[in-house]
Image (cartoon, rainbow, N blue to C red):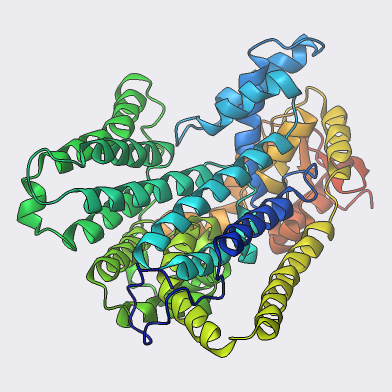
Length: 529
């Protein structure tokens, strides 16, 4: 085990004893793990981004396309350019448009290829894994770092989610980079002196933390939680508050996001209503909401792994690591209580939990490999260990590969283009997937979106009211057609289904869609099939 071995699960092994006994073995293990992690993320690369929260992914796709079309690329009709740019500008800017600008810039060289974003997201996640590995190696051991990295890179949800076109993989990468750099600052700072050897690390940590928060404001919980956890492991709160470098990091961390908020709220005016509904006080007393939170967390990080990570708090004797872990878990709990509606309904809100669990599992990884080393002294036994470990990784990758291969979303692009042609320039209300984003992206048609059952429940949770007749009259009186593509959702809204089939003629229908004509209601009965 490494000289940096800090856990106390077992007696120290003989110098050089390890499942990875040589420098070559360690380098090979790292290279193999990260190569496999990248390869599985690039599998089925060109499929449409509909496998994971397509509403969120298509939001970024529409923005990126609009930014790209603003550069007036050759060969694209003027009407299409104008439509795509208008659709992009209609999308709300909750977070700064950074990732989308990177993808739009890349389109200049590749053309409009959605898989570009998938490559970027995968690389962001893997770079985050490198920072996680370096951090755990310094805090625990090489073996603990391998264990954490394998969980972070190969947990099935991690593989699928880290390919998505949304800012979260970039945010996680920057948070992990901040954790590592702040840990370096703690190591380099000899005491609470105003300026010391750690000033460069302080500047870099502040910039990384600030960028993470700028990319997605929720990162503030995990930046501040990590900083307090690591900082209080070495200094008192009074010493931290009097340290000039701490104030420097805080200033750099706050500045980018604060500047964006000031501009977006008071100058641009587009952020004023974007933060309402994130916290619903009534949900704090709802047991069902906590059960839903636990369900989403289990999907994203695995309940068993989260349990082992929490148990690690009681097994680590190293003060720095234990304080760090406590700070992160408190940060996650605070984050969940603040975003109490979204953590119960959006599993990707739990992506930051994956690196927290990965770090918390590192003591178990160190212990596991220590026991494995004691039990496998001969080359033959060690070879068997390698084979079993590789077989386990391959099994996970093959299962995820089958999940990716199970559905081919490419034909949907043609279906949505057909629907867009059917609707032409007509005014449309739609009950369709992803709040009309698929229709916008591939059909180049913007429709008013009829609310889902979940939206109605959200209105109820915030104390609002819902009247079907008033809502239907409001939508139908201003539109010519009612498009249905989400038939499962239609079956959940029986009142809407009955009204449409009983009162309106079917204008057109095809594989995956029905269009009702709202312009001439029937006196009664049902026409069409």
